[in-house]
Length: 245
Image: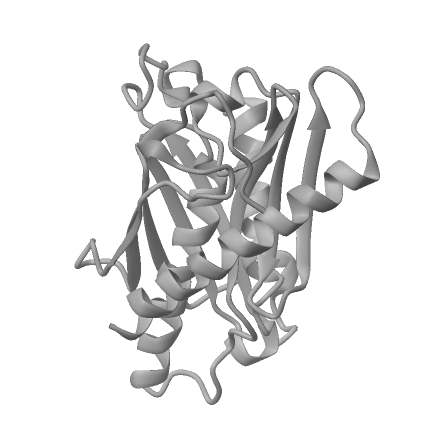
């Protein structure tokens, strides 16, 4: 449902509009799979690396593993963010986001079909303007799918291990109005902020929602879920186009 609002949104969008979205496949020639996703002024480079081993606790199980690492480049934001390598440890936000990315991608992966190998997704934020974790999940899936297709082409897998596509989008409420795909300006002043991770079979993987000010009602939650579902339909089309060429 599109609502006319007095506030101006980036790119002249309606309340249910995505920022301009593009996903460039095979952006890194040395990676088994990669994608450069741009959604508005949020740009994330995703690369998949295949390793013929698994974490020690998985050895002998016959199953594979998918994990992720996430990083924000120092000048991806308006002010320089210190590299976490200089600090000697990852921040809580980084750990939380990369765990979310890993969970989201594992949710659509058949680990038995993958065999005893690990796929690592590196998601590096080049430019940040809100929704970086959602962009990383969306682009990370494309990189993962391309890596799995390569394994199939090389006859290293007997069957394709991805059960469905997965993508993510942010939704929220700003000045009482539900909005799809918040940029930083909207996210920083949102009454409600949420990230929705879903498959292309219309099943939820994860819901992250917070009332930044006043608690929100089930009715508002349903409006946000409907917005997310409509936005993700566009995202799944873009993912498929990037993967299939």
